[in-house]
Image (cartoon, rainbow, N blue to C red):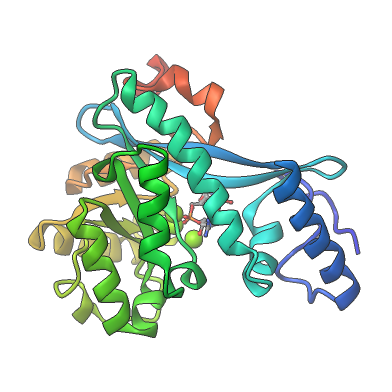
Length: 284
Ligand code: C2E
Ligand code: MG
Ligand code: MG
Ligand code: MG
């Protein structure tokens, strides 16, 4: 069942449609082949310091360059990757590629450049998760202090004790931990000061609500105020307009990620904007 072309690519394997078993099998087969044939790509989206306009971090976002169907986005294949547990292989592939790309930039002068990677609950809940990650880091000579892992609140609430032990081990190695889509999960604020968390990422939905008069903006105010109180770094996601940017800067949001500074791009394209952003964005 082929869906209409979405605004940013083909949507063949949509999470929203119920994937019948035939389609599932095709996707599963295709995704296994994609891993073998190296059809996956890592795109990088800049995380920009609100005060200096410097690119301080890059978030790795997976894409699938499908030979027939074009560029596919996470929503087109990650739900099934999770169901079939291929997500672990996908994520390991993404991390390896990102460790190579960003490791190269770190060694060629961007010592403090941070790499942010998204982790799926399935991956983190695996008993050998910490061991596997440390092995991968060592094999690629990627400095742990330059890595930030992004996890979600739901993962934490699944099994607070286990997760907290794993996060502590990683934090002891110097790895940073960010809570992605903060404020949208099923969670209690109780975990925040009990876990070694470094960064909160304000979800796009709250950023979208920054428009004069909208109440959702209050949530952004509250999250940023809390992050300041707890001395956490705060990144706003999905920032698209100058109005949002100005508002977030005024509240003291540390970093900005969103189309206003650039979408995720292939490594070759991102190389040019490392350090400073192109003049257009810097003038905002
Ligand atoms: P996320 O980690 O919350 O990533 C942010 C998403 O918002 C990305 O979508 C990004 O392209 C998009 N985005 C960034 N700036 C803007 C903006 O200004 N406006 C709008 N409308 N969107 C913006 P993407 O790349 O489609 O990824 C979707 C989700 O898929 C990610 O959400 C993350 O949860 C997951 N994901 C992506 N790559 C990986 C991966 O390698 N491993 C795992 N486990 N999950 C991944
Ligand atoms: Mg993320
Ligand atoms: Mg997010
Ligand atoms: Mg997300």
